[in-house]
Every structure is written in C-alpha cells, then in structure tokens.
Length: 497
Image 1 (cartoon, rainbow, N blue to C red):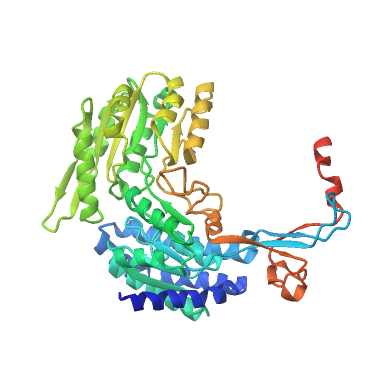
Image 2: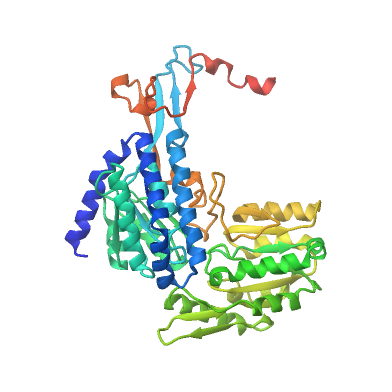
C-alpha cells in the first residue's frame, strides 16, 4: 500500500472511533452477533480456503470457526450487561470522612483504533475476526488488522464477510479494515492515530513491535502473546494410577496441529523409572505426517530440532521426521526425547527455548520435593503450568509446586493438558514475560475486553453533560456501583464484626 492508502485507512478508523464508541450496547452487541452468524454461514467456504493455505485439517478449522463465533456471542452478552465498563458513582457527601466529597462518576472508555497483528497458527481464532479483534470491537474500538502472510486469501475473504455483517448491522465505515505486509504493519503502528496494538507470534518480532509502540512520541499499550514452553509435571502416584492415560494425553497434546500451538507442553517431568518410554514411542510413531504452516515455521523447527537432538545426554524416545518438499513446505511427525534433570540443568541454554512444532522433552527427576525449586530456577513466564496427580493426592511439596507455577504462569492446570483453551469468562490466556508483554492481561475470556479501555472520571458534572452509563436514569441499563452519602463514616466497621 502507498502512504496515502495507509493514511486513508487510519483516517477512516479515526472517524469511526467516536461513532462506534457511542453506539448503544444492544446495537453494538447485535453487530457482534451478526458477525458470528455470518462467519458460521460462510464456514464451509472459509475452512476450505484456510486448509489450502495452512495445511491444517478441515475438522480443526471448523472447530476454530465455531470457537470464534462463540467468543463473539459471549462478548455480545458482556456488552449488553455493561459490567465491563466498571461504572462507579460516588454521590456528593457534605459529611464525608475527609471533608466535603464532590459528586464523582467514573467509567471505562474505548482507547481508540486498535492495530491487531494476526497469528499464523490460528487463522480464525487469532486472526481477522479472532479474540483480539472481537475484544477490541466489544470495547468500542475500530480495528485495523495486519493480515498474516501465511493465509492472505483467507484473511481477505474473512474481512469481506465481517465487514458486510458490520455494515448491515449499522456499524460505521472503518470499523474493521485490513492491511498487508510487515512494512505497512510497522508504519501503521507508528501512526499517532493508533491507540493500542495487539500481537500473537514470536518473541523476536513481539519485542520489536513492543519497542516501537513504547518508543513512539506518545507511547501506546501493546499486548503481545509471544513464547511459552508450558512445563507439565506428573507425580509418581499419578504415573502409577493411570500410565496409559498420561502417555496418550501427552502425545495427543504434543502432536495436535503438528505442535504449532502456543500451549503445547514442551516439557513433561516424570519420575525416574516411570516405565512409559515404550508407550510413548508407540503412540508417537502412529501419528501421521502433518504439514507445518509455512516454510519459515519449517526452517525454525528444523533448527530447534537439530539443536535438541545434537545436545549431549539427550535420549531419543521417538525420533520423528521432518520432510521438506519441493515448495519448501515442511511435513513432520512427532519427535520426543528424554533427558535426566541434571542434563536439562547443564544444557539449559540449548534445551529450554521453545520448539514450535511437534517436539517435546521428557525430563526424568529423582525427588518430587525438588520440583518447585527447579521450576523457579529454570522457567521464565509461561502461559500454562500443569500438574498430574493421583486421586486425593496432597503433600507440602505438591502445594509448593502449585504455588511456584502460579507465580510463573497465567493458568495452572491439574490433571489436564494445556492445549484446547476454553472460551469462557474466567479464562486467563496470558502470563509473565516472555509469555506476554503484559502479564496482567489475557487474550481469551471476557477480561480481554479491558485491554482496550481507559478510565475517565466526571466531577460535579450536570446530568445533561454526562455519558449515558454515568447518568442516574441509566439509559443504557448497564451495571452501576454506587457509594451513597454517609457511607464513609462506617468504613472499616466490617472488620470489627
């Protein structure tokens, strides 16, 4: 695109911002539902395009379309409820504990046009109409999507479907727009009219974009989901209780979508003498060859796989394979290796980095009480941390491990696998660096909307000048939290009762 093309796109988004922000909740929610309905109606066409461009199965992509539609409908209900606006009303109080209190009313307002860098591995759920776009639209922000180069035709067609649905629902022109190419994405991120950025991808690119957002004359929030190895632990009691279930669940989680998932378990800690090697090898060998998303993913996976297989002390459970075809596309089967805990500690510089593809490392440990200390020493921030235990199992070491995982991950899972992120209000899909650039945010679940809002308070403002959510007659019908006059004199009394 030319600079004038980009300027026009930014201008449209800027013009749409106040109109979309002022759209009544039920109308905005209806637009989100219209998008969900349109995506569902076009699912067959979109899934065929996505499968051709990414190599992901039609079954996987059909589920992803359904997930995307469900998320939009969930956000529509949140918009109607209005609790996400966090409306707080403090009535004027001449007898306030600290002197006269004015009438103060606060709520959250949209941050303005959002630039969303879409992901390669989720061509629906984290792309044109995915979680970042849906949460920004729900917040009242227009969205400019930098389409991913791995599925450009799907991005274009999805954009057409979404724009048509928004327009039919009365959304202003410029509510959703697409741009293509790295240079155009960087140029738009630098544009002063962009209010926030979001990204799903590699640590290297995420750091680069986050630095651009922070280095602007007026810095803006940037919400990046970057890298995660998602350590998983199984106690000796869990292995004894259900060895076959553990082995099968692990291989399925590692190999699903060719391991190209940010929640793939990169490490499974098992007790020495676990006896699962033969099961794991048999299960991994049975997994069919799967295409990787695009040649750059294949190149990166080949480098990590070769580095891990070449590390001293690494034992191969299932060697797997990587085939590069005439178009430089990669085709892989699962690689699973094993190392003693001492080897992981000695070669952490080689082994700890994420391998984006169907590769995982089994780590054999001697003592469960040491796992919490090792976890704190080895792992930076992750999206998830998982623990498999036996029924009713409890110990000080187990509690300590869970506590350490909660400090290092956004989601702690017990007796489950991290792949398959539930689209539900309480979900946390984020974590400390380098899992994300902002460890208090999430890109899945209703809390994701809050990333694209900022607080504004109105003091002693006449009703006619107040926004609808802050008025006493509450024309939008949103949730309001009120602090009545006289209440401050009783603050602290609940502690005494």
